[in-house]
Length: 362
Ligand code: VTB
Ligand code: MG
Ligand code: MG
View (cartoon, rainbow, N blue to C red):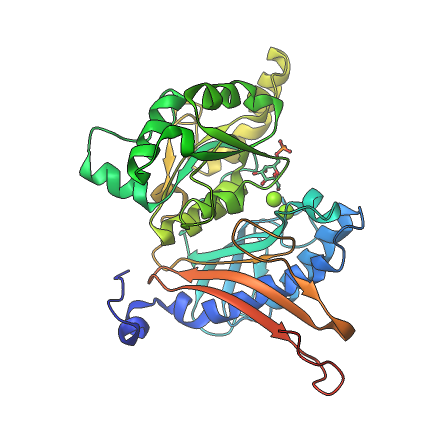
């Protein structure tokens, strides 16, 4: 997708998905975020998730497209809505779209009223989104400064297998600061104990999050967000959604599938059992025991050309304000949305049902 030099040639640069669906995608994540915001802090993460899923699905079904959920709420038998393979959209028109959704990313955070929960989704043309199985992915996420630095210094590259210190030093040089000044976001999990120690020993600062490493990944590509790098294993769906945004923003993600049993240190028998259970599904996606350990880069995770992404904050995030609720169902929502042409929008939207009854709170 060519990048626009001016706003005036934006229309020519945007692909059909971006042109036709991006303005509507914003409303899809906004609606899901508002639904979830009503459940914020009520301690019921399942219900919060459920209302976000239902809202997102109703909105998706209003869009003129032939959409298929590629990353969703799980397999058909375990998820009643937005399951992998579900067809969404009106079916009108000729847009064939692959979709990745996380209607409420950070369900615990929302239920506890803590920062970091969002409604998020991405779309691309058919085949444009990696739809691996729902197992962990280890990853490193960095912003566009690092990509530029790598182009200028071909021998210095971020490497998932390199010592943590090596990667931190590259990020520090790319950002023109010291390792001590970097902030690395990582999920606070026992599986990351070693990595957290290594990051600290290398001198960088760690921000542990109890959940939600997707938006911090996006934040690495946004100056002033205070996040320079994301590391560690999280959901593969979350990694692919991160990849969609990071591809548009010119950053970089390196990832690798991790069988859950390995990450959780289970017994050998249990590991074998789980591999056997997961392998048929993996093989359908071209993943075998031989290439399971391959590095999946941004292009492999999101090969699509006409990629769009939208995320609306339910609770406050590194660069988005939370959804605020006013009288009678009115709401104010903060969203980041973007398309492959390079158009990135931060929208601060207010929805008023009755102009007489509710004065505008701006
Ligand atoms: C990961 C992470 C997500 O849930 O999927 C995590 O990527 C689940 O990991 O951002 P655990 O199984 O260790 O809890 C989130 O934190 C929230 O969906
Ligand atoms: Mg979810
Ligand atoms: Mg999630």
